[in-house]
Length: 115
Image (cartoon, rainbow, N blue to C red; front, side, top):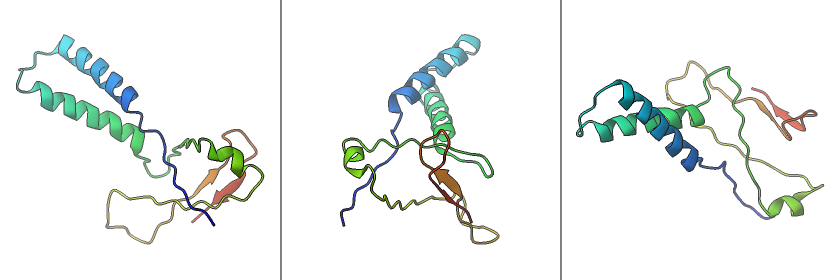
């Protein structure tokens, strides 16, 4: 049995572009001192990153993971997936498990999981 790992794209370029766009918009409306500019840029960037990374409760969150060249060797073979989610809080009222569906984004869905 072979193991491998795959993760979603980091979207670094898109995050940087959106950060600069929002920063320019804020600077056109507000005066910011040179000392506050790095902090403002960091806050904008972190807000944008959280929008890409967080999945609020009850809200669907799609992830697209490119398997690269491995996708061809996996065709028509079972693929076992182990997923790990980290919660924003460690104080939960009861044990929770994520639920979801996987496969091509267009129907039919190939697999599902529920709590």
